[in-house]
Image 1 (tube, helix red, strand yellow):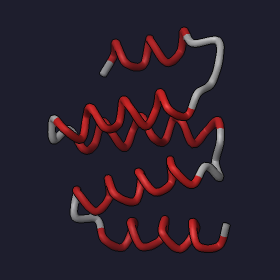
Image 2: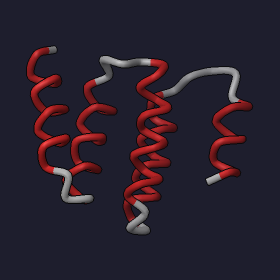
Image 3: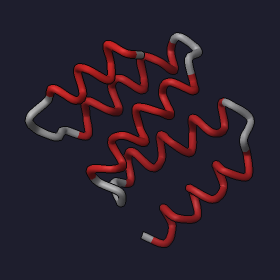
Image 4: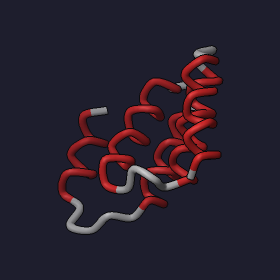
Length: 79
């Protein structure tokens, strides 16, 4: 995780695809908590990014945090 944080911090530009791709890698490794952390960093840059929000909701589902997932899905619908 430390290397991931350093890479994200060193980036001079923001690209939401970087965050979704990193999250996908973590999810594929069943590291759902790390995927969620990456996505939340992305949301700091772009809080209304529907793709990032959807991935956050899916990460919550994978961690069986259904109430949190529903809350994020509701936010997506509101957007």
